[in-house]
Image 1 (cartoon, rainbow, N blue to C red):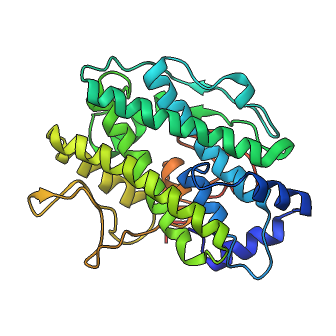
Image 2 (image 1 turned 120 degrees about the vertical axis):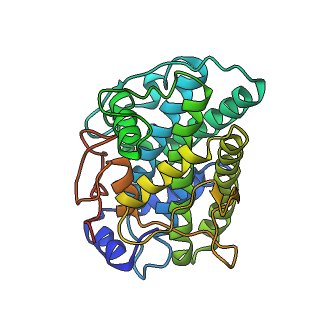
Image 3 (image 1 turned 60 degrees about the vertical axis):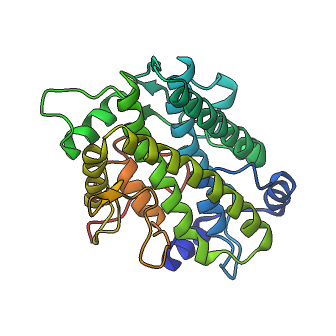
Length: 305
């Protein structure tokens, strides 16, 4: 997920000690990490000099807070307990919340399972980090989804997009997160050299790919390919040059797996992931879903080129 210059920059800013590394290896397991966690953890493996476990895992924790809060509200009507949001840095709140009134048992059960996974990722990362864990930053669900939907052309100016209003809105909102998580992990894969990281990352990729495929298939079955395609185009407009992102239909047929001609998924760098969650194609340290930025040193999105 990281380019070599980014890894070198991370190393130069890190302040790791041996206790951090021992704590991580004691806590790590295949099932415990989320896609975001794997992405930034795995990126450290190829560096000649090990970067800070704390910096890597804390970036992942910021993203897991966002996913866990989004899904938790959708299925329960409430967010993470306070004991899972405290830590170093500025503690934020969640702007905009709700609960989906699921009409179909299938979508409700999909949502409940994914919510459980994402909340477990937060718990794992916090345990691995101990007292070094960052607090949950300010998260904006209400305004950010509206801004994203307008940018994608799903709604017009003056209209709002509530991700909890119905199942279709929920699935379209989830589509934004799940595809980004998978591409983030793929970007990290070439940098993995430590077998412990590789083993965990393989399990993480499988879980996140299952999530993403479930969301993509559900959207396709509901005839929402056009809307999903607009979201895909919007992501492409944010994450730098090139047109790699794929909707759920290509050439008039289903495209549940976004892969190239060799059946391989593409990856995103950490800065490009931040372009999407900050909802800007420019270099920035805050915006979008994180109006005050993420906590920790890994906090800057990429530029326009």
